[in-house]
Amino acid sequence: METIKKIRQKAKANPKKIVLPEYDEKRTQEAVKIIQGEGIADITVLSPDKISPQEKEKYIAEYYEMHKAKDIDMDSVRKLFSDTLYSAAMMTREGKFDGFVAGASHTTPDVARAAIRCLGIDERITIASSSFIMTVPDCVYGDDGTFIFADCGIIPEPTSRQLAYIALAASTLAGKVLDITPRIAFLSYSTSGSSKGRGVDKIKESVELFREIAPQILVDGEIQVDAAIVPEVTKIKYPDSPIGGRANILIFPNLEAGNISYKLVERLAKARALGPLLMGLTKPCSDLSRGCSAEDIVDCVAVTAIRAQ
Image (tube, rainbow, N blue to C red):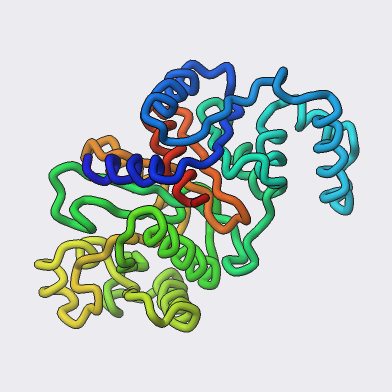
């Protein structure tokens, strides 16, 4: 797909240091061959023998100091660092690497916790969330079949404020990685007042908040997905829509909707789904679906590298 080729080319233009902590995962090993062969990133597979005992003790002590106010004990911290995931995150924090990618053999909560606790939250975004870059073959919607879906992996029931900042993070990702102009749709079962309910009210409030924090970005909502992405439907349902059925960033009302939607599009429309890309942190990182392929790892490394450029 053209979007994937562009992402890899952009990563290769300024290779960054990316670490993969899942050293014993076959798909990781396959991905590394491709990454090195194409020059996509300066890649390190972090096996335990690459972390000296002194270095590991330093990270354990630093992590304990960062979180001891939360009643965590040293034995619990040592247990976390028995896995290379937390060392990779701490190494990224200190600048030894520019980003990390994991999730082929870890759950999303495992990867997200390591990222949030080690990297910390970006003060401008204020929350951690996630998104997928979706590329749909033979599709005229979005940006020639390319979309960003958010949040699909982190926040189960986001508030209005959280939805607004999820959209802000997704719009930043769109510009940085895809070089596209964001056109954001806050999705609902209602289009411009066609239905009522607490969920609709939440989406309306989210849009108002987003317009306050990012007035320069094109946004609409509450809006149904067909009216958001199909211009012909928009003309019937909502002819005054500012995005005119051309949304390329879809903000879902909750995690269930986002997670179900990306998996349906991936499987039924044979789309590529890159992510979950963790957003709102001080350094770039990406989770992976445990059902990912080696090519998925390659492309998430490429996206993470671009975000670090």
